[in-house]
Amino acid sequence: MSASPYRNSGAQNEAGKTPATFARDLDWMTSEPAAEPSATLLVVDDDRDIRQLLASSLGARGYRVETAASVREMDQILARTGVDLIILDVMMPGEDGISACRRIARADGPEIVFLSALGDEHDRILGLEVGADHYLPKPCSPREILATVRAALRRRNAGGPSEGTQYSFEGWKIDLGSHELFDPEGVLVGLTDGEFAVLRVFIERPRRVLTRESLLAAARGPDSDAYDRAIDVQVSRLRRKLRSGGDEIIRTVRNEGYLFVPRVARA
Image 1 (cartoon, rainbow, N blue to C red):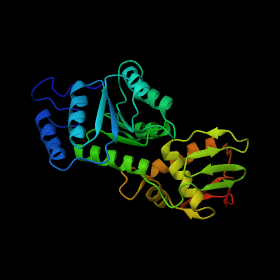
Image 2: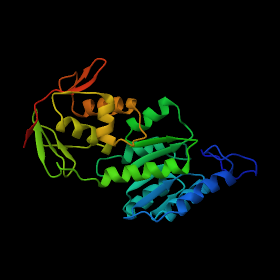
Image 3: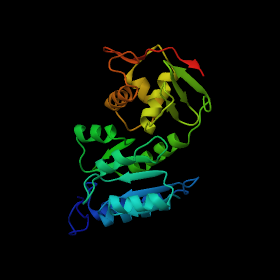
Image 4: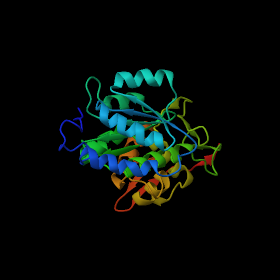
């Protein structure tokens, strides 16, 4: 559960700063032209002050911002409103953020950014494993939050030269335009945005060794705040979903990276 940043005048908030300092850091976000096109964000945190600070600062940047104090409220908002990105706390009363992310993460769903005081490597990897696209540990500056939101939305809205093209490998079919993957029996396989981004890189660069760094740059962009262990997490999840018991689809090349083994052809 989040501790309120305003319980006493000298207390530090969850971003590791006093309320006054954190508020001053947010001022710069209102001094530039508003973002466009507008996207709808949902801030889910049981701390009212954090919800208000993020709603105010991100709203000033041109985003439409909804807020929820619990996962239950989040579900109610998602049922009635289209949301492009969720900023999600982990420790909340009732259903926690990890459970909620595991339940709602899907390829055609909103981007999910964890913002949590639980920031060690185990927590970050767990957050990515259950479907989050980013994990921001606190303390975290407003600039980093905004940069992460922008990067996630760019990736969500970006189109590339391969949009609308279909490929096949080992009986599988993938549509890079609709972000759909079908198994050899024609069953649609759900992928998170992060998983699809990595698989796309493999499809576009089959049968060559790709380093973790090159995978990360291609899948998440050169300004990504992620780290190379995130690629290991995504590859592990892809292997499970591709039902690859060994390395026949994605092979680990020791001390180098990964190799997508099958031949890929246009469908």
